[in-house]
Image (cartoon, rainbow, N blue to C red; front, side, top):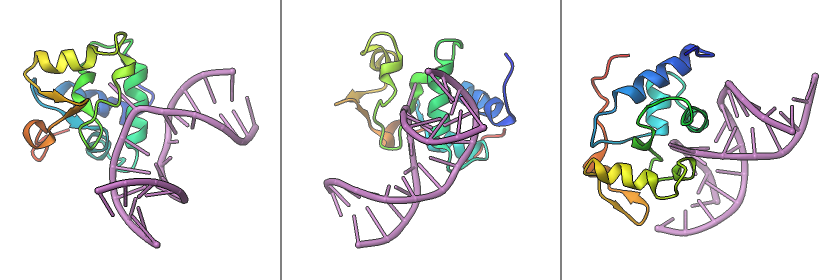
Length: 109
DNA sequence: ACGGTGACGACAG
DNA sequence: TCTGTCGCCACCG
């Protein structure tokens, strides 16, 4: 795949590193990739890439743990199903970030 | 070319 | 708490 920018390449890498059974947020990814206030751009990329790459896009949620991207998965329940298949509890379209948030303190990009 | 538009998030009031 | 505002930046028509 050809990325349009180093930022996109980093985003791809970070998403590929999210552990099974954990989740992270758009803002966290943007920050790790050097554009701390471009969480929005990360979301845009997810939607675009969802059709092309076999990455775990379902592990990326908004800062409150809501499944804001579920509409990008064909079936409206697909995102929740994928999360639950990994042991992540989804209640009222939301995940408990205290339990499942991926610790990115020591990640190396 | 260019304005509208998001899988967002921080902040003020 | 809850709501509105604004910054952000690649994409699309």
